[in-house]
Amino acid sequence: MSERGKRLAMAILWWLPPAVVACLVGAVGLQIGSIIPWDPFALDLGIYRRAGVDLLAGRDFYLTPQESWPFIYPPFAALLAVPLAWMSWTVTTIVWPALNAALLMAIGYRFGIKGWRLCLLITLAVVVVEPIRITLAFGQINIVLMALVVLDSLPGKRLLGERRWLPEGWLTGLAAAIKLTPGIFAVYQLGVRRWRVAAVTVGTFLLSVVIGFLALPAASVEFWTRLAGGDSGINEGLFHYTNQSVVGNAVRLFGDGAETAALPFTALAGLIGLVAAVAWHRLGQVSLALSLVGFAALVASPISWSHHYVWVLPLGLVLFRSRRELPRLVLVTGILLVAYVTFAPFNALPYAQEETWGIGYRLLNTAGLLLALTFMISCLLVGVRKLRDRTAVSDVAVSSG
Image 1 (cartoon, rainbow, N blue to C red):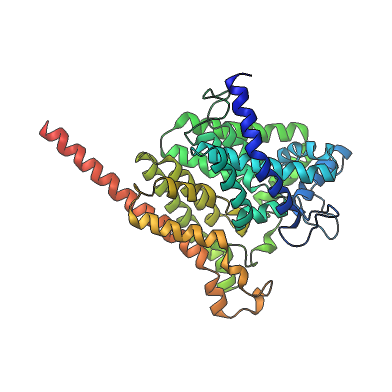
Image 2: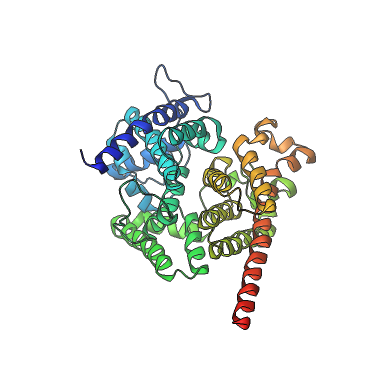
């Protein structure tokens, strides 16, 4: 067996424990599904698969059945859901969490973790980290999108060698083609003057739109015209307490209509994260920069359920790996954010009773957003200062030389 084959075989061996645990967590992570008989809840995975089934049957996959939730993604994403329709529901609910476990392993490996340590880390993350656990229980797409971006742009070890088969940016463009929010990473690439990567990202996304119009013209017109009118398909979910975005918190604190007034603050929050990311990229901390952009997208998106915050994993790995290098303010605010997102203490508040919460509960529920903003602002202030100091040192060196 070749060296590459041995590495792949060992990777599969270490992947099996987290894959099995991910399947079990996916089945009962919300205490709704069951293992015996095998009946996972996997609400969102069912929606994705239904879109693939409807597409193959020639039905409108944007038409929501009674007592269900809508498919809210672009038509290109429905095309990607077709393989789910080819599998039985039982096989789908096993393959999907196992794939997610593999992607989490790939992220950890990119950070330089391997062997039993990687196996243990991802197994614990699947069980303990709330966004990862709930993503698996819902069968959500969050881990896939994060992995596409991280594996696209984060430097580090690659399981199958260092050669790139396609240019950097295409995986991020694919993530944006599935769900629009990863498009913010193209703005980040522009900010760090990586023009080619940004062009590949945007080009991949635009190609997906063209493919969608060619393959599914009616669905494409429906989706893009509806989105242009401000209808995301789940606008009524803004108020729910697990929506941890700027807009979600504004609506809970100030009532209906606050989402419009919150838009400038949403843009500002996203800008803070982006500028901080650019600063740390220039300082050589690409992993921290990517995590900052991930959190910027989360706070700036109109709806960011708590289980969307899977970016807590790469951020936690960044903080651990660079704990001796990062300034104390960044490290402390980052650790507080990671701890809050990991354990999601807002789940202790009265469930699904947001309308009756007093101001105290509503303020408590903003803690996650406030911690995210505090972390991003800390990174911005420290990063800009370090860049300024480095520039000053360079200027002194030039003038004395």
